Length: 113
Image 1 (cartoon, rainbow, N blue to C red):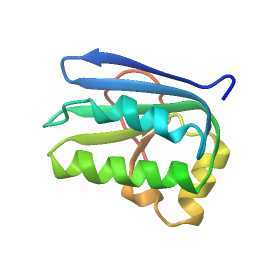
Image 2: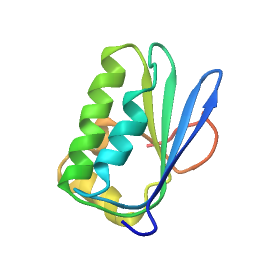
Image 3: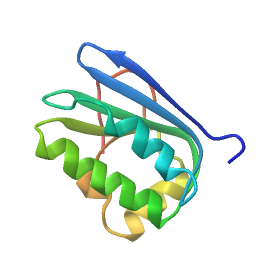
Image 4: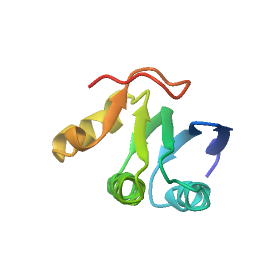
């Protein structure tokens, strides 16, 4: 797992988790651990994926489970800065519309589809 990082920045209105590297079977557990400890409630979790150049089905599964968990507790998930390949995975699997997606990779506000 060289060159894979997960960092979290906590704000009053939510958390930004930045992921860098490939989101796959080997790296998803690290993202899962980082997000599992977050109190969600009515907060926003912004997942900055601008550093993710590749995502496989395990990455997609992680995003779907995270979305369900956050929405189920009244929170809001934003995917930010998607690169071409992860975006293509979401479109190919017809899950793109399930997510709030923004081009901006930083901050907690602003979204566009």
